[in-house]
Image (tube, rainbow, N blue to C red; front, side):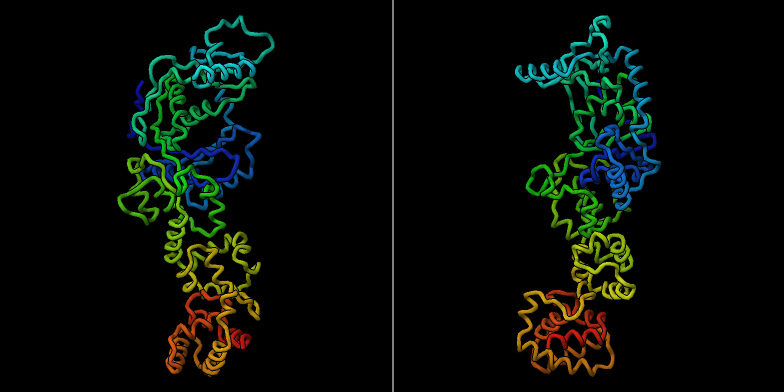
Length: 479
């Protein structure tokens, strides 16, 4: 049977359907992004379904984390989220219709019998699966007092063909697809059934997901066909791998979206990076979400797994930080301050004066940072209490010769009338020239005295933001 659901004249409807048993991981975020982009590119709808039929493992905390992660990324859904567990009666009604059509049957196999079937299949070199024991048996043979599972009566002969928008034509031999369970013996619907019914009822036209679901697409297509429903267009995207080519794991960066936020990545940068993991538009690497919407199409998704690269993500994030307005960066920092404080060793509950000081320092800070955490680490000097704790390298810089130089510079700075970056630059450059020194020979010990570090924003900006009184006091502390 050939997949005939390639008609895209109807309004496109995509969906993201996570299971709330954990946080929104980076692979799920990319799946959500691709679905969101395709819906926006085609003027369609992007829907959200929470697949929470596993009530024991589904948690409200995980649901909240998924919703928060999508919201932070800017991937807003178009209707209220659908919670799959609320639709169990509808799922059972569809199974009843399949039983009536003769496309499903009651199975009384015990767990022990099923385990024995799997062992026999392995011993004979066959894929482990159900052998159809109850497929054609008469109901009168049913054991008393045993609640049956309901199985789908899958076609035994021929092929199931998926015309996949990414993978191309994929053929499955029906002999290798066993009779899957639709309803468990306790009456709860299975994932395979629920997905088909919900996608149909939600009007989903395109199912865009990881290629680990490709076999599921064959099984689900058989259910669509048995019910006389049109299949959606399937698009199975290769999974993300680590830089070494192995399946993405935590050591590579398979973390929750909230972890990337806590590490100081901007949502715009993460979306840009995820869009390029497996999809391309020519040689374009950096683009806005508006451009991504304009360009996105399933034909741009490759068949090879994409490789996650933290260095590329960090460089891209640095680009977005440099291009962001100071107010936007302050807003991101305010939202994530609780996550950033410990990493950047910031004081808790910054005062209004401290926020103002950070805002004034932002132009210099953002030029040298690849993450917001790195930016705030570089801003520690703003809030440090005197006398500053010096890093080892800064301590080494402030030898007797350097202190003598600072002592002489201090006299010049104390008499400076205007305290701004321009006048400070003129003063210090003139001082260095008079001493026959390169600017760096003066700037480095001055930086160590003012920030306690050997790396900081431009030294003239540091002096201006700290102000005359604090700057001079920090220099005196080192003398």
